[in-house]
Amino acid sequence: MKYCFLGFGYFFLYVPIISLIVFSFNESAIGSTWTGFSLRWYEKLFNDKELLSAAYLSLEVAFLSATAAVFIGTWAAYVLVRKNTFKSIGLFIGLLNLPLVIPDVILGISLLLMIIELRNMFGVPEANGVFTIWLGHVTLCVAYVSVVVSSRIRELDRSLEEAALDLGAKPLTVFFKIILPLILPALISSWLLAFTLSLDDVVIASFMNGPGYTTLPVEIFSRVRLGLKPEVNALATILICVVGACVIIGNTLQNRIKR
Image: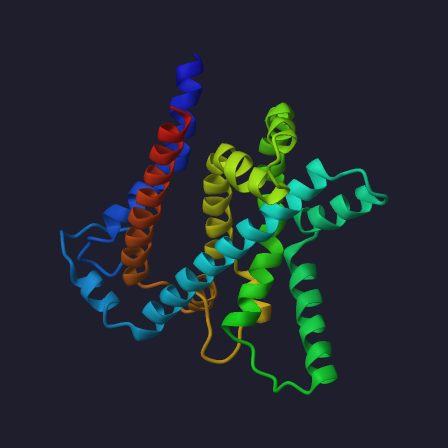
């Protein structure tokens, strides 16, 4: 019986994705009617400059956001787990995890108001772009990264760090030589999670973007009102293959590290 439930779960998850991939090769412009195999939508995709530009921007922002979130979230998790003797530790943990429970609409509005106030304070010209989108996504992803990494740090044997310190190693040396290799699988997992969250975000990006800086989810969401064209299926197929390859590579690296 458990295999039946497992099979139903996989069927529910992957049949829509497989259908999207199949219909990206459909000759007909109607997504629900199969008329024959064709690559015409991939050809139109590479001629759609707006969609390709939005996809490139989303990948760029996702890569930068995931990298920055892993860097910030890892240090925050290490400090809050290993150096948790200072006062108001609960307040700092709550502030770090606050984006997990705040609705994306509230977070996007708050960041937008903060940026407007900073511009008025320092007299910076108003122009939202890559930096503002990146800032919003890093704010969101740091919380997820810190949760994943902190759970891994709590599982580590603290005697390894204490022994290294007793032998004369500096705290930074202990972190880079001992802790970092042990938490590397968690860093890879958190980077992939942050990359996916940034690539999939619509609400925060819609508040933080500007003219000429539209991410792929926002571009697709704006086209829904006029009806999605099959070239969107072609782009989604390419992204699924790329992200799937990244996940396979990440899992392979994790298995090698564990061995």
